[in-house]
Length: 262
Image (cartoon, rainbow, N blue to C red; front, side, top):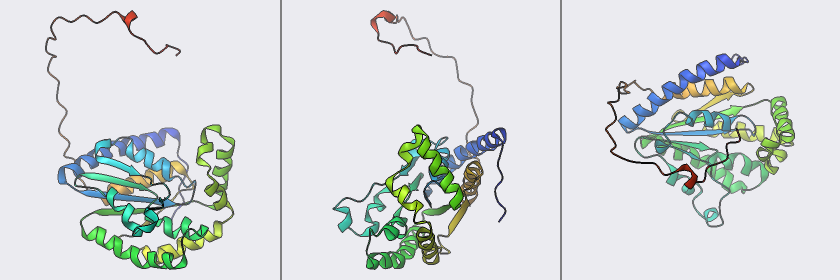
């Protein structure tokens, strides 16, 4: 695998613009054919998952695309079948669902931080491949992406978050804990891949040390994995507007406007 290179801003935006056009066509095809697409984003903290998801959904119609980022399970959810709270978010015909972290929390943060028992963890490793085979057999297109970032790059991004007021919210106590557990998370990821990198639902690893390249590589791969055709209707010229009759707008002094500061 060749390492990603840094792109100029103009190169990046040119490629991203082309990808956005294809994503619109891609979603149109999914809706027209009634496909069900589910994309799982996983990886280390600060690996760039959120930025890629943001670019993925930006050109899409939100009525057919949903991002799922579940909070910690409630006391009731902790007593349910582990996968139960994820299933209600699965796509219907013509929909795309994106999981910003998923059921793989059990194999990552829960395993490393001790939030689950050994028995629960081992059961997850047994159940997860069968769960995903059921998903695929049901006709859902399941894509799983792991964003891989080096120790040095992750630390650089953490330091940037710590010094940037607008990014403080991105630095959670769990992020800080992960800085001291690099090897533990690496071992957990390796074991997770051993059991869950299955032919029916393989893991696709994104080299995420260069953010812009990672976004473009991931988005272009998504377009390749869900084959589509351009069935967008041709643009049409709008006819002249019909006469609206006699209408007089109220005096602007009767309305409260936002101050024009800029």
